[in-house]
Image (tube, rainbow, N blue to C red):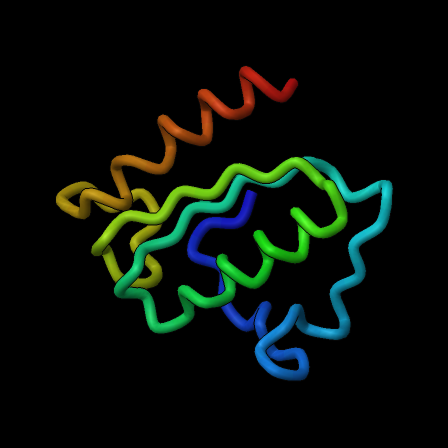
Length: 93
């Protein structure tokens, strides 16, 4: 699971960071991000890379919440992603 991922879009022309290699062993991935996070492009780049490799991915983007909200009460992103992630885990595994 990638929750508010950052620095994954450091490749040429904002592609996947070269150090990250997706293979047939790459597991399904859950990604949760907020649109107002300054690193939000990382989620989009990672999702595109996973789709290109036909690796299952579930992406959720909320409009606000910032970066680094964790499980913080009072932050809609912080209270939303755990339930989405739990449901995803139940479906995948």
